[in-house]
Image (cartoon, rainbow, N blue to C red; front, side):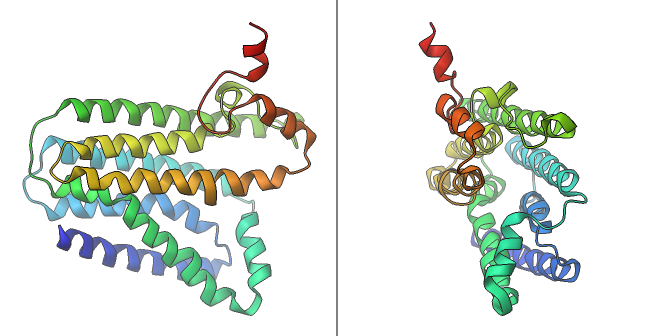
Length: 261
């Protein structure tokens, strides 16, 4: 297992170093968001190839990561086309001034690489295991993963479709999956990693993989996800009304609808 972690660390370091150089040349750190999902695919494929004699669980998890990473990278690439640098990175570029080069290397690229390795840990654990057979936890994990994919991909598609209409410019998306949670895409991503954890849980020492879903849940709830995004809408009356009746994370019926029953 240590060799899996070592090779994965080297792979992710070189990958993030390449992305850092690329974004520095392009002067657009938003590229790192596209690179995020692809980094997981690299780890999944690398660890799959490192272990001779594939079993069904290896193929399953690698396929799930490939589907998720490819969809996410493609979605972000299409979304960001022609938009310029994301507001977060643009603000950091301004705030960090002459220290932006060194701070972005460590605080954006190396930090994301480190987080990627922790979140990808259950994938390493699964691809290293020689245990065969599909168990009930594998099936349950797959079901939860599919639910997560539905919310993430569905939420992203609905929001993209909403924003393409000129009459919706400046408005808040409140329909479809966004009617039940203010962040269906974040909920979906978290659900998918809990699904991967359940697949790893059937293995020896599989419980240690809980670090992965706990970390991604914390990041999306308290750090780079909901907290950071919703700061943009402070003082926005439409969003404040939407927030009053809609769950921040877990899908649920609107408060207005519940009260009217």
